[in-house]
Amino acid sequence: MARPSSSRVLLPLLVMVFTSYLATAAQYNVLSYGAKPDGITDSTNAFLAAWAQACSSVSPSTIYAPPGRFYLRNVAFKGPCKNNATVVRIDGTLQAPTDYRVIGSAGNWVFFQNVDGVTVSGGILDGHGSGLWDCKQSGKNCPSGATTLGFSNSKNIAISRLTSLNSQMFHIVINGCTNVRIQGVRVMASGNSPNTDGIHVQLSSNVTILNSKIGTGDDCVSIGAGTTNLWIENVVCGPGHGISIGSLGKDLNEPGVKNVTVKTITFIGTQNGLRIKSWGRPSSGFVRNVLFQHAVMTSVQNPIVIDQNYCPGNRNCPGQASGVEISDVIYQDIKGTSATQIAVKFDCSMKFPCKGIRLEDVELTYKNQPAGASCNNAAGTTSGVIQPDSCLA
Image (cartoon, rainbow, N blue to C red; front, side, top):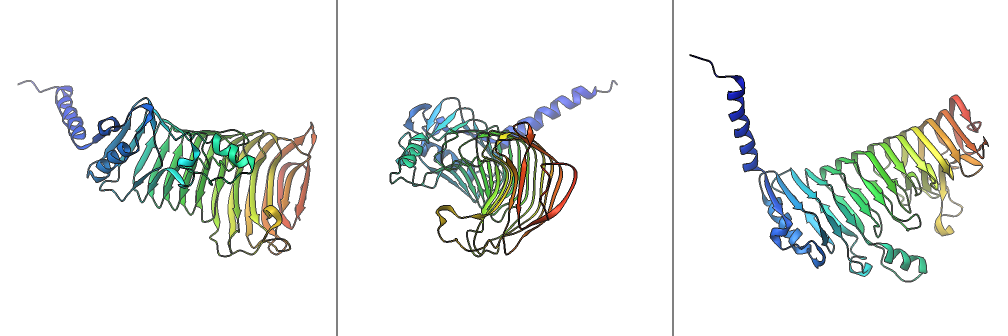
């Protein structure tokens, strides 16, 4: 009797496995809940209804927004859910109200809270923030604005292939989360749009940001208090204010920042490159074990900067010293051009001088000439080619 071929045995098995997967993975198309891809009809309740179904499913689930423009007011997707594998797949555009007042005081536009295992994939989030930017720049009494996409008190989160346009305020915020992966994200807003940080991370651990392009009116990535084990790699930044740890030390009792790697970054025409910033007043905060590696600067105003005397408006901090202790920060293979004569500036705390600063192969020029460096209360070492000459004690 002839033995059955392996392909004849394997094919029915694969069909059974695939059929079983389809039976257990549910998809919830927002059109089925009343959403209209016309950019006019309010689809907020339809998205919430799809979320309610997906979140209550014990099996992996997908919420699907097909091509088209979906008008959404502020929407909160809340957990915990009965499954820990929910995908929000966007093939179209989610569109915020053009009247900034509709969501301007909500804090967040698209918000996930207390969720586990959520993936947001693809699509465009259009925050229509220009009206609020104009209001703020006019000096009028304006709402603070809404973050476009926020995750709070969540874990095992993935954000991929997403484009965030013209956020009212921050584009993406990760707050109180663990195990987050952001990959292939594009952030776009005007270079003069106020407070539109690209990605902000705070009170979170094990966050990875990869292969992204960010151009905005504030920090491309801002790293807030309580951030640990953060990895940022292969990011293009500009326009914007650079990649910043801080501002820290605004509060007296504040968790620190540690174990941060920022590598393979391109800065183009930004206000800052690699920055650490703290308020000039007492605080329990700290920054330690930071690696800045493989960065290219093109016409950056402040390529390398530590500013521990941040005091906007000279209120509540003049005459005081920052309590944030900065130690063990490495700058390795940082090259390019400065738009100002001082390319390296370490302005550290009088009370807690920076220590363990290390420069390795840093080459920065200004108008085809060696740039300058400025140090206050900063100690460390150098190796390799250092240009400008080091001013570390």
